[in-house]
Length: 167
Ligand code: S3P
Image (cartoon, rainbow, N blue to C red; front, side, top):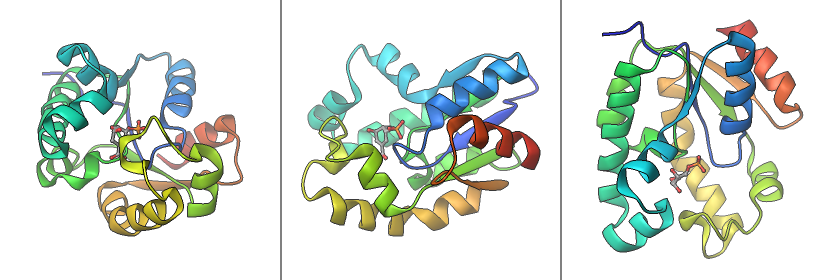
């Protein structure tokens, strides 16, 4: 058993988890890890293909196991996929960990991720889907988070500073 992750980043697609995560890892002199990348490596296929071929439920189960492994093994900075918090089991794995929620409002999400063609959950009517997605998830991000950092008007460097200050 290890000491567990130094920081876990949650938040919607485009909130900057991977950019901020890499910056944080640099500042902490720690490694960066990302459960989306772990799943792609383990499955040998892209996440969009897992969604299409096996469905979201299967993806969430793979994600839960990826989070379980990463939380047990990784002592650095860990970023989760934007929908990881939807799963009860995944949320339970985050209890007591230093979780930072990178928040972002809907208009900023549309600006940053736009039509999100590469993101399977935003294929049709992205603005409405963003609004629904945020409404469904906001309370779940808040539930698991020790700190909430708004990213809308901040650069990734400023977000990283705010996470370090707050945790
Ligand atoms: C998802 C977010 C993605 C990825 C998958 C599903 C979501 O991760 O896990 O496409 O449900 O919001 P990022 O937040 O890293 O883009």
